[in-house]
Length: 129
Image (cartoon, rainbow, N blue to C red):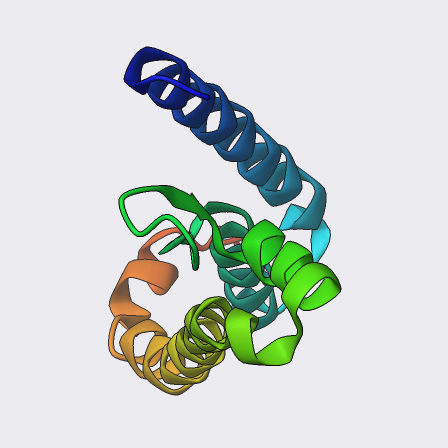
């Protein structure tokens, strides 16, 4: 059986690789123009990779929710995986709500500071002939 040190080491390795993978995903999606789409894509992947849930048979153990849901569906059916599926669904729902709120709030904050944009504009000198 797995002891506490192995369990802790496995979680540390999973989180380290998950954070690195999420940051690499963020670098890949930075080409999108729409900031709300970028935010949604980044948060959706981050929640898929990093959200934990409790193991259905050993309550003292935690596992990644996506992996736990997939393994529970394959071995015990959808009923045992519902806790992990609800956690994954809640994470995805939060990601889309955060992106929608960002899309509604960000244009207002950008339009409230037009003076800063005008200060950076280049003014061409007038040439008289």
